[in-house]
Structure formats: C-alpha cells, structure tokens
Length: 142
Image (cartoon, helix red, strand yellow):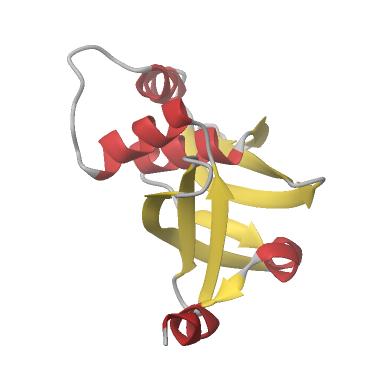
C-alpha cells in the first residue's frame, strides 16, 4: 500500500547539523524524517520558497530534460529502507502511457517532485520501519 505524503518541514538536526526533510501524511498522521545532503536540502528549500536562481541548478536542468523529452512525472515513491538508507523511484510516463521507473535518492526525487508538481508516496512497509505518528510527536512536546 502507498501512503501519500507532503513536505511538512525542512529542518536541521541540532546534534549533527544535518538537514532533514520531514514528510507528513496527507490523509494520515504519519511523519517520516529523511536525512538529506546540504545541496539537496538547498534545492528543496529554493523550490519550496519559489526562489528562482539566476541559472538553472541541477534539479532544474533535470526537470527541463524530462519535459523536453516528452515525459510526465506521475509520482515519486519512497520504496525501501535498507541499512539506514532510504530508496526511491521517480516514475515517468511517456506520451504512449508507458511508465518508466527511475531509481533515485529520495532527496533528489523529492526535489524533482516539487519542480514537476507530482505527488510523493511512501510504501507502508517503509513507514512501518521508520515513521512516527503526529500524535506521538505532539505527546513528546508535552
């Protein structure tokens, strides 16, 4: 089963100074934190804030290539968690409806999903391994 999520926050881990993308369930109370690199966090932040760089960044270039080659981005799926590493696919569809799943790092897939306006999903098995609920997160604040 796939659970649709959105970006809930982009934060810094105060202990490691590592960026974390916090994905939140759209119709559920799930929260999934994913550590990302500084470059990818910057690419995500720029798109969230709708800041246009003077020249295309890497993810902007990839977006342009996908569009110019006639593909549509159908969805991003966070597919697995192995040895503390998340895996994802960016699913493209060509003009004939043929799907092309591309292996991607979640951070890159999320940055592209924002630029291509496509939904982000997480497999339930990944959530079972590493998510927290919004309710338990709120309880921790008490």
